[in-house]
Image (cartoon, rainbow, N blue to C red; front, side, top):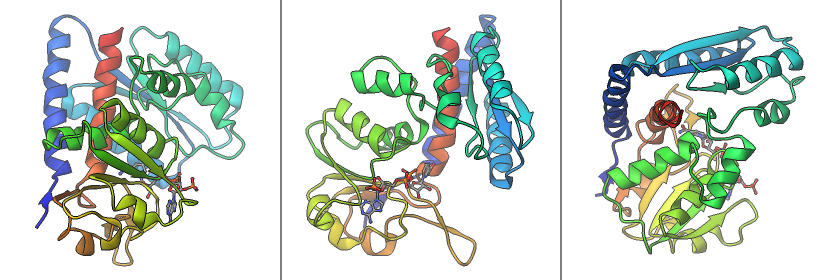
Length: 280
Ligand code: NAP
């Protein structure tokens, strides 16, 4: 029986720490504020932004949403990015993705100051992480790392495999594990004999975006398995990239979906906003 790594509880712990530190900054006269740029009315994006506003309220972070219509102009969005970069009262901000097709997403994100990039995804933030410089870290991979550390999983010197090489999850997750002195292998869709590679890992982080892609054969006996994937089931629930029923008996610890990485992603956004405010 594997230990079930409780992402909800660990995320609550992070939120509580952030709330304490936000209150402390408040006593020193420093307020913490998160701004969001929301373009159009994609229902999922609207829900995500509302959740993030609620999360901010819970920990005492002020939040503002800048709403643009679906046909927002590149110039208008870039102007706001410049204003938010310069605004003293804004600790950090992010652009809710996806953006409408006519918007040059890379161009827009490249304009965000790395000191305010609470998503940790702009090129300068990615460069800082790659070079080992202080940076705001991407929320999902940082959430994965916090889940491991706060569950007492030893990382240094162990074999880690990351399944997925996206800029959002896989690549930064691998870099963070490397920074913690794991020996890291990155797998992707062209990896030959995937199960042979992943089953050598003591720590397996799965971010493939393919439901059930990891089964018992992919996992070493006693490995720690972190499932980043999120998929809607036919019944309206959520499930991950890992075949939980098959893998759980073999793992020493495993994250569930839901209740694993997902809550951590939200918590790390609050953490980054606090860090951005402290950095200023
Ligand atoms: P992505 O951009 O689609 O990247 C998927 C990666 O997995 C790619 O590098 C791909 O390889 C690799 N891959 C796909 N199928 C594979 C296979 N059968 N074998 C080996 N490698 C395979 O996805 P993402 O944005 O990183 O997200 C991954 C998953 O995490 C998704 O389910 C997403 O919904 C979820 N997610 C969850 C959270 C959260 O908060 N829990 C946050 C972000 C994302 P190639 O590069 O060769 O194509």
